[in-house]
Amino acid sequence: MTKSKVPLADGALPPPHHRSPRLAPEFDDAALGRVLRALAGAPGAGPRDILVARTERLPRDAGNDGNRRGHRVTAPAGAAPAPARRWRPKHPRGADGLVPHAWADMLTARLTGRLDDAAATLDTCRRAADAGRRSRAVTD
Picture (cartoon, rainbow, N blue to C red):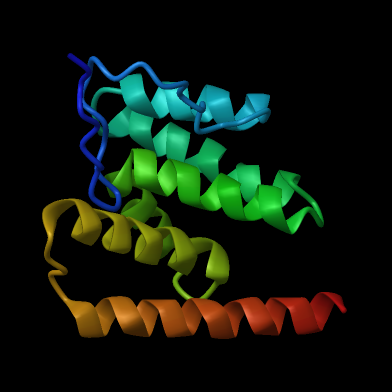
């Protein structure tokens, strides 16, 4: 008798006994890996605030590598949505504060099946895109 394969719904995690290879969320990025491991184990607000500062530096340190910069924003926001939302007040008008907040909102909505304030999240996404265009125009 063979086991039948049950397809997973989009975004669903396989059951714990599933033995397919697992990709590390940091890929080959050692600095990102250290931050993600620290976010997973950081108790309380004090250590998390320190990690927010460390997480803030990750995209800037990626230089002009857009793929690495994007992943260094989205991976921590997905791993720890609360610190990603605390990042925004430090950079209320910049893409570096708006993108992680919006990404955390979207990931939380995907996991829970509901988006608390769709209009606010959409506004955050629009403002992040505008801020990104402005910052690229300054550096070009």
